[in-house]
Image (cartoon, rainbow, N blue to C red):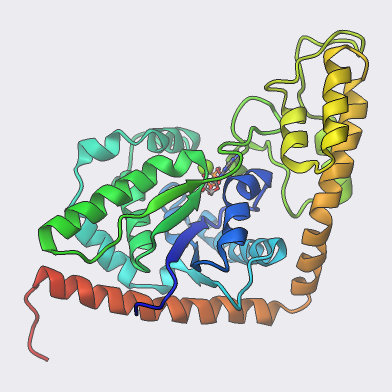
Amino acid sequence: MGATRKRVLTGDRPTGRLHLGHYVGSLQNRLSLQDEYECFFIIADLHTLTTRPEKAHISEVGENIRDLMLDYLAVGIDPDRSVIFLQSGIPETYELNLIFEMLVTVPRLERVPSLREMSKTASLESMPLGLLGYPVLQAADILLPRATLVPVGKDNEAHVEVTREIARRFNRLYGEVFPVPDALIGEVPSLVGTDGKSQMSKSRNNTIDLADDPDTVRTKVLGMFTDPVRVHADIPGRVEGNPVFIYHDAFNPNLEQVVELKERYREGKVGDVEVKRHLVEALNVFLGPIRERRENFMRTPSLVEDILITGTERMRDEARETMSLVREAMGMYRLPE
Ligand code: ATP
Ligand code: MG
């Protein structure tokens, strides 16, 4: 055991396609951690039920899981080094979730800022118990493989804090079973959407998806919001907080070009359209190899499915081991076999 690598756990809900925000918020870190850590990437299908329990939504999950798998493999998550697994394929998740529910209070969860937001976005009348428990279920996901590092976007940091508290409380009550994991926030903690108003998000229709084709990227970028007071190209423009430049900074590797465009923009010497054209180019260069890998995997759907099955079996072994440590530590009464 001593020689095993430290673990990472993170993942996504299968509610739609991954976008540039996911890339800079979490995927980028996942890719660079694959060597040093044993990485577990969860497709959190149970978490979709917290805001979308209707059968119509459930029926979309299968398709979304396939899309998510393709997104993962396309960006370069390597199934030979990392584990990709399906949350609902790990029944121990429900078990650990129930135990963890005893270790956290309702007022504590009511203070998690993102939950209110999620309930509002999903137009729920009031908070379902399961949605309030979202970070508890996430704690079960993170601690089942006993992960020490959780690469997430800024909006998820408060959830990881709940995991840390639950891990500490468990260890205090029953003995040291769990590490207290750290969140690792991405290079861009919260990437703004193409609307320039709120965080890029699947449910806000303001995304550029990793699966978008070149024409879609062009249309989306040309329609992006920029500096709202700049009505003509010869008026000095604002670079700070301007989503087009935020994307240039995040995705255009040609630093010289970015510096030069910013200078001219500030002086009112370049039009929005030109700045956007360069961004379209940079994004398509960035997305090129991702598209290529996606194409390859799309040709072998059974391979993609096998990767998920194998990963889920691998995680199941870990989950069984953790649960036996948990039961032993708690000293729960067990019926004789
Ligand atoms: P939803 O609209 O369903 O909430 P989402 O697009 O916000 O979807 P999540 O599933 O909430 O995506 O996020 C998955 C992971 O990606 C989390 O770690 C989250 O912090 C990160 N993330 C999501 N959007 C962004 C963003 N715009 N910038 C940085 N990180 C992000
Ligand atoms: Mg979100």
